Image (cartoon, helix red, strand yellow):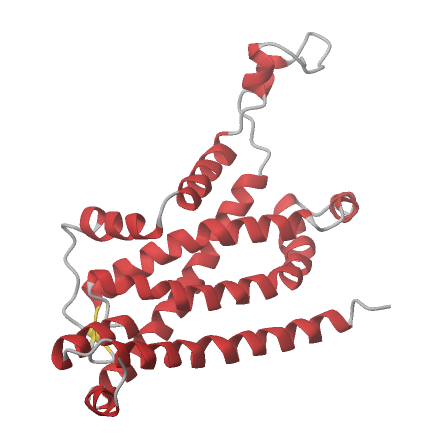
Length: 258
């Protein structure tokens, strides 16, 4: 149960929660940053039209066969296949399993510098946490980006190609600027989600807010009061952020109204 003395004991370790707050924000920022870059690559890979075996289905008059093994093989896109497998695997497996694989398997024999970020965040725990969260977030963000790209009218692509723009230039100057405007709100919401999901990283020793709860519980033998403080800290992070996102979303939609 809650008690005044319990809160008094917990407040003695308030510095741990301040450090946890800094760590959680840093973890979320780098996760969204690297997750977005990974998601952009995955989305482009899934939308690519690279078919190396296309010639196998061509007939003598230059038409493509519609049926048969050769026709199926000609439609195979290895780049899109790899991206699809990545997205489906990371969306279909638990985040905790992915985090443990990254930390205990992938980075098991990797030596990290002894430098501590902000003087207290250990890089040997922080970097694997960022990598695991970014890889997971990239799988979800890639679907958001892909949907945003596909929402752009195909006629704009045809018009840009008729003007002599390459596929890369069309994507960079025509498609992506419009798509990013459509996907900014869900990307921002992903940042809020990452703030909450980052709490799982305390299981590998990342000094986030939940790590502060665990350390305070071990020192005071109180669990209810540290959890209440952690809840308030997470709320103070996510609620204002969601409101700011909603404000900018309304501002961005004003130009779309007729």
